[in-house]
Image (cartoon, rainbow, N blue to C red):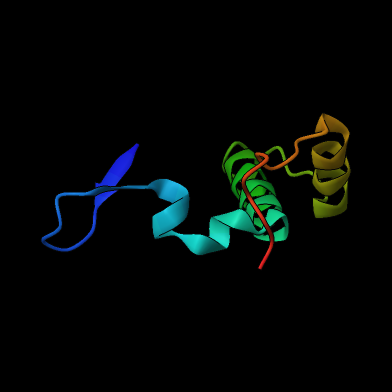
Length: 69
């Protein structure tokens, strides 16, 4: 997905536009919060600690070019 910065016609990548997405802790928090909220809407609440443990089990790693800031 590409975005355009201002009036420039040079495309920006999503991670370039939103630098916080390069921080694995921020991405983890977003995913856990989204899953928790989605499950709560379906009356299937799960403790946040359990969701965090499941996230860790997935072994998701940031792309090679991503660095935490």
